[in-house]
Image (cartoon, rainbow, N blue to C red; front, top):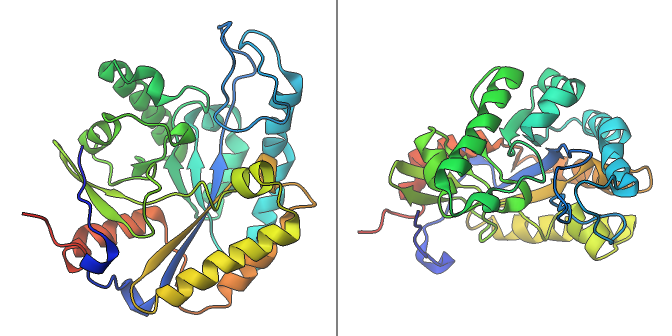
Length: 303
């Protein structure tokens, strides 16, 4: 895997289709955590905990497990209602095991016609566990993709790794499987191409900065501060996108943003962004398809 370093002054203006100016993607991460694991090592769940004391995988951690499960039992349904109220879509990511164990959530996203992107098999089984064994990494990816296809009814067009922790082999494996995009890299505000031995794949940037793990948990923003930050990010990107199209990525987790005292920030930001007619509520697949056809008008292939 390789990709070119092309700074913005050396890029051509990116012109989204149909006169759209700023692409906005608000991700709902539909994740699943095993209650326990057959290990005496600390259980890394792919995100910050409610209580910081790490428990071994083979010891039930009720506070942290049930806090995360709140997102499946309550938070996601409040978020579904909020997106419906405003009338905008989400681009969802999906742990394959959630499709097996919490099928109602997947069906609710499908009923709305929302995008679902494969997001590993189980949230705590990181691809980085297999960096020295590409065959084992590929087997894990295959297991996730197989369940995804059974549950969603189609092949996944792309991939987001648990905790964004992929390996140098991951883009190669994904391109080999025919996927169009990877979302693990957070190093830009525009899509770009990655080169692999199996062809090109689009990197569609995700964000940890504009992510509820960051602004609600790590920085302890209030609901009002979170709303102000989201609007500030939008306003600056919208201003810059008069010259070249940009992508605003927002990452949400139902067990964080789905609480009643936080939902106002999400609802009011979505309504604010929707008030701009030239915002593109694009799926990742739509961006990847468009970029694969038009990348030469943005970042010409390097010789």
